[in-house]
Image (cartoon, rainbow, N blue to C red; front, side, top):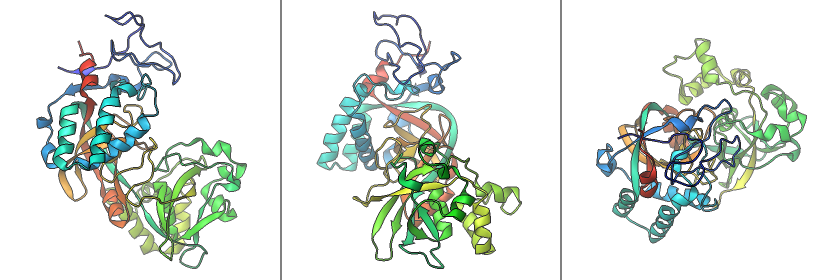
Amino acid sequence: MTWTIRTRTGACPGSNRPSAALLLSALLALAVSACASVPEGPDGAPAPGAGLHLTPERFAALPGWGERETLPALSALVQSCRRIASRPDDRAMNERAPYAGRAGDWRGVCAEAETLHARGPDEAEARRFFETRFTPMKVPGEGRLTGYYEPLVDVRRQPDTEYSMAIRAVPGGAFSGDLGQLIAEIDAPAAAAGPADIRRPRREIETRQIGAPLAWGRPIDVFFLQIQGSGRLVFEDGHQVRAAFAAHNDHPYVSIGRVLIDRGELDPNRASKQHIEDWLWRNGPDSWQPLFNENPRYVFFQLQPLHDHDLGPNGSQGAPLTPMASIAVDPAYHAWGVPVFVEADIADHPRWSGLVIAQDAGGAITGPVRGDLFYGWGHAAGDRAGRQNAMARWHVLLPNELAGRTRPLS
C-alpha cells in the first residue's frame, strides 16, 4: 500500500470540520487528523511537497539499520524537539510538507526522547526508542547527497603578508543576526536592510574595504569560509570564536569550480574543494583574487562565543548541528526535525546508511531526495565533505500515531 497526502476542498469526509482553506499565507492550517489537506500554489497546483507518495516499511527492511549508531541522531532529535516545543500544538510542522503533521503530533516522541537522552542511554536503548515510536516511510526515487562542514580557520587580529584577507562585519552594523544558513547560496533578506555599500560586488567590497574587519585570514581560507557561511576562527593564542553568517551582498553565487571547468583548467570529475585549492596553489597568489572575483557574492559575518565545542553552528531550524546526524533538506518538501534514514555511498564508507535529522537548508539543496550531510568541523571533516557526492535513497520516520492517521492513496 502507498500512502500520500491529497489536497481537498470543502468538508473532510467523515468530519464536521472544514478542510484547510487554500490560503497563500503561512497561517494555513493543516487538517491531518481527520483528512489530509495541503496548501496549493497561486495557480491552484499543489505545493511542491504535496505529491510525495510515502510507502510504509519495516525497520528490518532498512539496509544496515541494526549496524549504525542511533545515539547521535537521538541527541540531534532532542535539539530539534526543543525548537518544536515553542510551536502551538495545531501549528503545521511545515505547510509545504503536510506528511509531517502538526507540532502536537510530535509532543509524545519529543518528551520521551528528552527523558531518554537525560538518562544517558546506550545504543540499544536509543535504537529501541526509534523502532517502537516511529514508522519508516519510503520516499520514492533517488537524489544527490553532498556534504558540508564548519571549517577551522587560523586567523590573526592584525593583517600581515600571510593573513591578508579580512573577515568582515556588515557595513555600518545595519543588519546582524545568525540566519542559520551555512551555505552562502541561500537567499537571505539581509541586503535590503543595510546601506547601499552592502550591495556592491565582491571586487568593490575588497577594493574599498567595505565592512569592519573582525579578523584576518589567509585568502583561500577566507574565501572558502564564505562559501560554507560559518566557521570557527582560531586565533594565535588558541582562543576560538564562531564566525556566523550575518548577511550577503545580494549578488548571485558563481562557483569558481564551474569557472575553472568552463575554462578547461579542471576536469569535471576532479573539481572538489581539494582540487580547486590545488589549482590555486599551483597558480600562485596573483591568480587568487581575479578568480575569487568571478563570484560576485560576498558574505559578511558576526562573531559569536563558542560555548560548547562539541556542537556545530545553528542550522536553519535554529538547532545546533550534530556531526553525521544533521542534514540539510529542501523545505519545499520536508519539515525540520523529521528523522531521515539515508542510504548512500559516503566519503570513505561505500554502501553507508545512517539516521539523521532534518535541521538545515541551502540554496543548492532542492528536491525531495536532495540532501547535504553535515560532517562536523575541522580539516578532516572538510576533506570528507569536499569529496561527498553520491546518489542516495531516503526513508522518513514518522511518529506511529501520525503515520497511522495518514490516509492511504486510493
